[in-house]
Length: 475
Image (cartoon, rainbow, N blue to C red; front, side, top):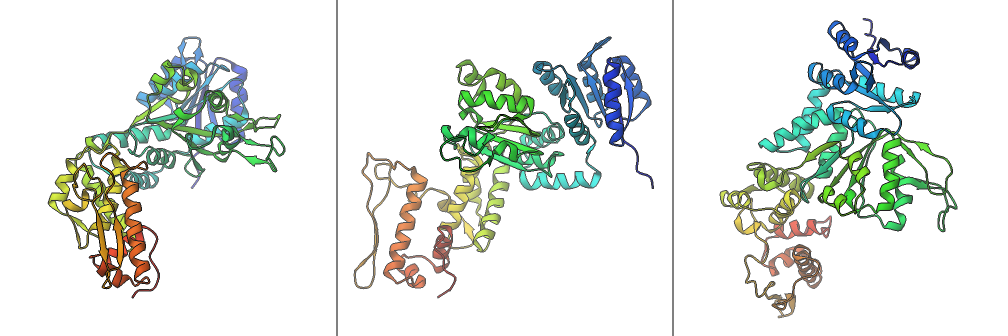
């Protein structure tokens, strides 16, 4: 059975350019039709089924944006890309927002044209769509209206090559969604490089992002490939992009706009093909007004917008996620799966969750550790010590062995003091210290340690696994 030859419509009033692109695509085994006006192109669409379309934005009888909107609305399965004059990014971004798959600047670079057409023709087959739906359900857990709407938007966004900006409160899952956009796209076979812009020291940022040549600065003992080049053929996720210094924003803008980078110490630019996905919990528009974020970079990365809903607005998704975390953590810790009591479920549904999904996972992890039986109840979900008076954030605790030696002891904090490392980490450190003291005093006899601490052996083992203190041999 013969393989169907792809058919692409080229729309441009420059006849020489059309013929040049036609020859380029012919070498790729792609058949083309040529149109020189908007109305001619629309007529062709009524007569032929195109696998892709590439149009100029300035045509004799109208604006190419009209054709983009026409194709997007009437032929949604046909990706359409646009040709734009060099440096005219505003209209290119307008085309992307109107539904264009991607754009290529004039004069047309053959390599960029090849990459664009190949990605446009790489449409998902029915079996691939089924696999993508399964992937969405696995990574994006929930049945609430905001999540269903997010799933619909992600399918459209993933098919485009346009930059994506993700915003939402801390802990809502921005990196999970960025990874899903990548894995649903036709770049899924390429790398997904995630960078936390706030975690890289300013003095190392240019070298980390763009790479450097040997000897370009003190300590550069060999050539280094930057993270942007590592994303070649795939997606680059810039988390907390608002943390980028203004000097780096200028360099990033050129990389995103021209798909070229220049390593530190090099006099040559390197072509790089990547899709940029960025995220921030901060209001970038406000930062632009304050002069802390470049307006041109904002418009360049803020083409496709994804707003993640806070957990408190997702209703019953809270329980779906809680049970998912119970299953996952139990598997990781190799312990039996617990169930939530009705009181525990009601407690979770009533919480505000300022830390969102990340906070929920932490709560479930602590609850599994605290529960000695097969049920997670209300007491296990509340922070330990359970509802102790505000004036004494940590209650006094001590236990002795049969010779009245202290096994573990914790003194109350001063009534006006707060743990500088935060309550969660403070409590974890206290818990770990108590466990180590008990184990050392009982010469790591876990059965005896559990008895002295007033807990079951299984509960002790949960805690040891959590802190990486578990040993291979059982008593």
